[in-house]
Amino acid sequence: MMNDTLHDALNEQLNFELHSAHVYLAMAGYCSAESLDGFANFFVIQAEEERFHASKIYKYLNDRGKKVKLKGIPDPQNDYGSILEVFEHAYEHEQEVTRRIYHLSDLALNDREHATIQFLKWFIDEQVEEEALFDSIIAKLKRIADDSNAFFMMDAEFAKRSFTPPAAE
Image 1: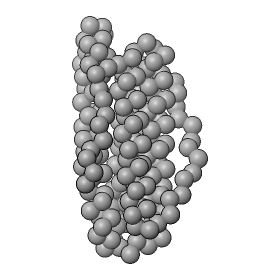
Image 2 (image 1 turned 30 degrees about the horizontal axis):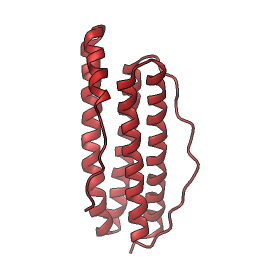
Image 3 (image 1 turned 45 degrees about the vertical axis):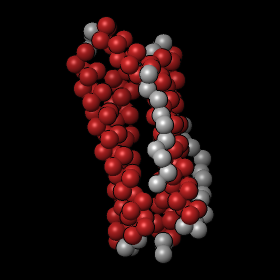
């Protein structure tokens, strides 16, 4: 049986996933304002993924008979000095998401809440992928530095990015 502490923590994570979507949409807005539509698309897709994560937690809480409690979303950062800064901020944000997921996992392990432990495994795997993705992009952005051709090739590549939610498990 899920205790109140874990229930509250899952609700906090659901709200943080919605906040994450807001953060990524603000990053997309910055990229659009800089006429970098591919980079903007990258972050629009990230926002879609975060809303999907929130919906997974929403469904899980409902499946477990627990009430979902939504809160207000804090204002995201809207201005950056460069695309590299945007991705570095996004990477730091994903590291915070990982810390939060690990905290949830620790709570579930301590309570021997096996259903939640299993549920969170998907999120742990997802965070490994997310951190690796942002780390790789940051390395590429640093490598190409002032090579505008490579930069615009990257922008064009990100324009092709799409999101298809994984099949229901």
